[in-house]
Image (cartoon, rainbow, N blue to C red; front, side, top):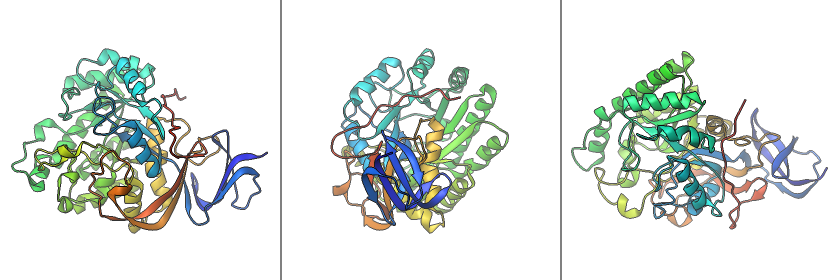
Length: 435
């Protein structure tokens, strides 16, 4: 048999670990994985040498904002940035677009806006907001991967938070059809208005107790309703114990964190590019998050790429828009710190590809395995670079990583066995029923 493509690497990161291998591709899928020197005839062969071969990353937490706020970020720019950062699949959040993805009609508007613009594959989350409970099952049937809700103010008026009673009702409805709910977990009663425009005042206004109370609420409601629940962008390590206890009790509770919580600290927050909710905290908290990740209490590392127009990031910490742009930089940022902490590429792939794909049940993604999509990344784990705004593909090069020295560079990205180049070739994904 002759294959379309064979990629050889002495550092292929496979589900069973890192080893020399040759990955053969036919019709957009991985057709065979052989020893590094295996004879695999192909139309095109690439030998990466010591450059690592990874599966394309799966980022299940991305705010693209199109339609409606495309001036913040759009499908073309976000997916180009994703490919440059080794992300070949992303799942788009239901806000901050207009309309938000809270009905089948709004989902159709999202899909129409994305058509012809995707450099990587894209799926969509639905939203659970007050009053749209009748829309949840139709959205599920239309192929969204799950439902996002907020326990506190989302920052945009068209996506209000759920009260406790509304959250319980939404969880019960989502559980009735076997869906997944993903929660921005901060208790509004524990949040305050910042007493000033500096970072210390902002940090004090969103204490760890706000996250812990909301996480404990989600755990309690998941226990009542049986829904599968996922905690978004975990920032406060105080939440690890209740999450671990719930998991030990058999509740279907998972959690994610983000590159900025693992690599940045409060003392470094010198401008509004660092503002996000929940906030970046202190080094001891960061150490505990790493421990939670290594132990498996936290399963995923995803970007929470949440950009805005530069004028919205020029205020102080009390007034500026909260959101961090890192879609193109997450792999390098996490690898820089993971390697320093004694973690290997297999762990990073597990956190940033395998587990996010499993969380959202994105079919055929996140692994170098026979039968999966041939989404491949050539990653040089030793090449260092300085983050330069001229080399970022996000719509606006506003990020706290500007000027930072990172280790690990994406050399090339393939989507279904084809190099990602100038012509958009990504597909829109829908949830598939799993057995």
